[in-house]
Length: 235
Image 1 (tube, rainbow, N blue to C red):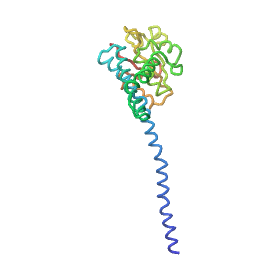
Image 2 (cartoon, rainbow, N blue to C red):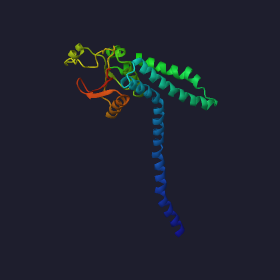
Image 3 (spheres, helix red, strand yellow):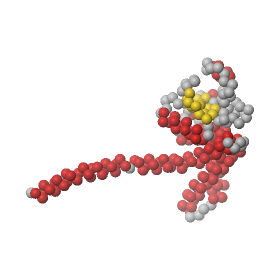
Image 4 (tube, rainbow, N blue to C red):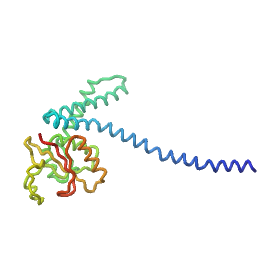
């Protein structure tokens, strides 16, 4: 009788420990998955972040032309994509063919991405057809940066791009002669506005941090509605 009572007591005493261990396992497994997903996203986006960062840095800090800055950014991104593809190639074949991978896969992929970023803005990411119509008047580096952001955040909406003095009058505002929404001497507008309403503040902060880290100037203001103003300095 005493031994039975002792075994029962041991079972009761051990119960919460076992349940606690199971609970810990159940709550612990999402963390590695989330970490793995974050790492995969970083690996996927890194080449395009490098494209934007290198191009903007060379344009704003080193005085490179738009075309040359974008070409250098493209080359850096192609190098990273080549490394990725070469690792996969080596995994399956045991060989490394850098030149072949770069020529037939990495460079065409990056060039195609740049072409897409420079000419296309989805209707889902534009406030109006007017915004889409003005898209190609935006500076190429801003277009590539916007496309890279949209690649990660499909809910981004561009609310305004190029403007003229009449547009300010239509909005009930005084014309701003220094506005980078105007087409500048290089033939491009250097500013874009992004919607911040109906979006989580965390997303808005992350978007602003993205543009700032890439080398753009950002300003959150409510002149004609709460929005994020992003601009590329004019040289």
